[in-house]
Image 1 (spheres, rainbow, N blue to C red):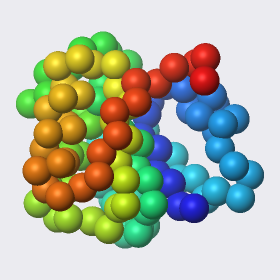
Image 2: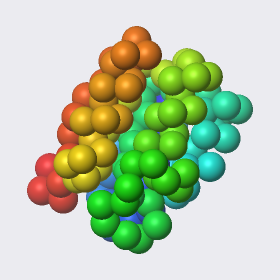
Image 3: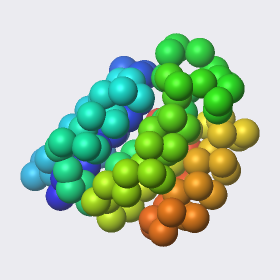
Length: 118
């Protein structure tokens, strides 16, 4: 299974990796630009996990180009080969926007705010 994981929080990253099957091929990215580059050149991916707020800030404006929403805008135009998107951000404004745009582009989308308790 090939998975792309976008998040800038190292604790969430380590928690996510602890949950993954040892045979999964995980690509970790920390920025919108790196995520777009991987989607463009590293796919196809079975899953792509998306955070929204990537600069160490909380509740960033979705219009910014350094957020998960920028990745979603690119995805909706470029249509990379991804089976499922998992929106794991806790940003309650951006998450529904991300999901709606991905679903409108024809993708399967799961909303799963990241939790350390899983």
